[in-house]
Length: 315
Image 1 (cartoon, rainbow, N blue to C red):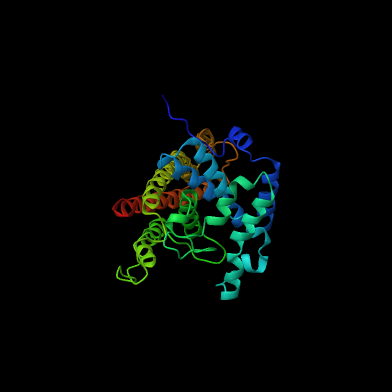
Image 2 (cartoon, rainbow, N blue to C red):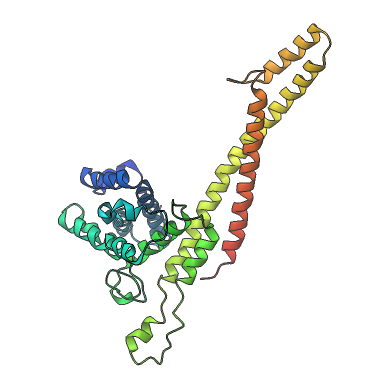
């Protein structure tokens, strides 16, 4: 029997799984305030959905966890724009304000019967297994599984996505950060007087099993992006070859000494020109194709390099 897969962005799913007008209005308000945050919410939901599938979660839990992830940053609606969208590093006071989005989002969800079932996304996504997260500093025994999953998805997208206030960090470098955050805190040893602290010291911030699955999700995405880019490269190659032929006949036309010869090569050129291409503009189009081809080829090569690095990563 074929396994039933939950597609969060399928129109039927969006209608069936309680993403009704109430939720959409909340999220539209979030998007109107900050396009980066809205896109981030969508990315985290998509990654969470994929993580749940790789973790072999039930369809029901996957639906629930994904919607929690979609709503995880809803509290940022009430964070002042000058703080939320600040281009530089936050001060301690500003960071304290940002951190309140977890409890604000939780309270928003709890006050709305339609959002209440998904309050965990807002409340737990910045908690850490070793107790170093917020707002409550929970540890593994008190941190729900959905919070552990959404934390990994949130951290990955927050680091890898280029924002207005930071430079881009590569995919493999982002994964290295998440892997490092899944390792124990070696600065606290097991002989510590407080047993609970010693136990927590054996944990990192992230669940390593979830981070390990994230690597598979990311590799899938990279291979898909390579395939799409390669299709476009193939399209560009076809058009470059075609316009090389046009260029050849154009050169012959220019070099011809009689009008008959010029017209002869001109007619051959027209055979290879397609819609919106003319004798006068094909040079620019040709150069644009060649530039796009080099950009895409470099992108594919860079993605393959990322794949090599990621395959060597150990969680």
